[in-house]
Length: 334
Image (tube, rainbow, N blue to C red; front, side, top):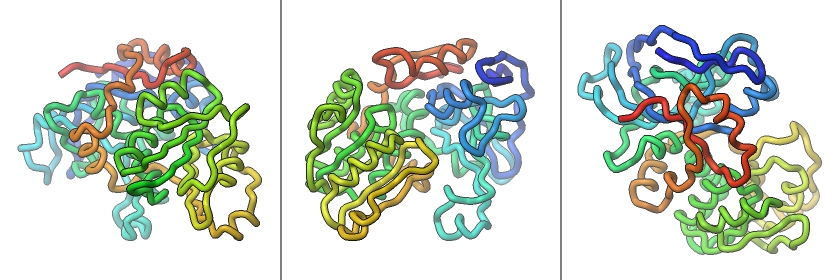
């Protein structure tokens, strides 16, 4: 099979790899589409993200959809031919975290495109059968792939406890911020304000459900919001967002930025704010697929650029292009 392999920072090489065989309990998936994530671009440019370091050739890509073409022992042959969205996780089902239902926090997790585990920028991948989620016929391959970042948005809004009539502030209007906006709207929020210094991204956020936008360099943030979701990772945005939350409100940190930052601890204490982080997701795919199938979330409209597998390096640089929101690598067509 063809595979786009990261050999060193800034260098992708097309290679021929063996098609993997599905182990017992696994399915083999022919990959149709892969979304480009900011983490992929970071690995491409820097060769590492925090403690995760690329020390050997690595296939990037963890936002993927495709079709099951073979199954391992213990998996029904009826699954062959199903179009699926891939939840790119292999937790240890016996870890304490998995048994608690927090399998995303499993210390033994093997996650696509996180060194040393290969990802989906290739023609075939395997995954546990339960992590290959069937999608309806009307859902595009691209939307199937983008159920992964949508799941991050769902995890964030669940943590934020957003419900009908909620007022929400979101920092960052990149792909995850826009996912958060769409999910907040679908969950019933009636005021969704997005803060981002880029005018084009603010305009994009409005097209996907933001009721208002703010330039953090010149505008004041709203006061007494029910929840603040940071999708920027910027310490200044986090501090400002916390100041905007009502007493007993919620602060959810999604953006990956500085490893440490100063927080207004006394304000958090005195207002009894609930502050938490989001690390990937657990049990979000059924909701993601339902939101897309119902039309409450539009993933297809988020795609602003498409590349072939051979143009993976260009795709990994596309986040720097003005107006680009989400790029897709088209590995194969239906």
